[in-house]
Image (cartoon, rainbow, N blue to C red; front, side):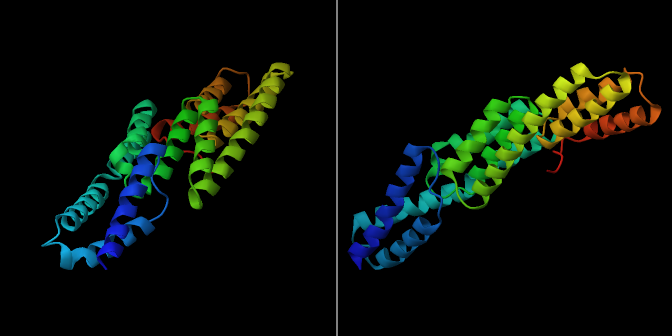
Length: 235
């Protein structure tokens, strides 16, 4: 029972070190549950064996530290994202991912933080960086986060191709009415890839055109809506 308990605790330490070294936490709660079994198994030996007591205390400390501190940077990043402070939000999300002691046990905030980093990069128009972030999620995470990143990455690729086509059509548009309609298409595409600033630019461009008033009013309505909230447009 003694050696079984020690093995249970040591695997937790080993997996924690692996997470620190590779740059993201172990994507499973299994090491934690095994470690807790080890603590129970070593409880009778804790009083007379310093190694059993020390290792049990260390594992409980690491488990508690991770439980308390994980998610704080992610929550702060969410607030900054909602306020439109994307650079500052990236810093907070990155701390959630890169802080070494948060990787010692499974951190379910990592995948969401990296996904929000990709969205922040898209909001800032840094689409190549967003691509890399989505690919990083696909490579390092699994399940929901992996599937979500794959879908978002594919949507980004599709919409960027559409945007390129719309830009060419805009340059060749025969009149302001046609330009206004293309600006609407461009704004919608940028909203889908969560680039609110560029979407607003295209809506505002319609006001400068000799376009029908209903189009201008609709564009202004979208500008007002997007200026009040930084929520990404649903795919």
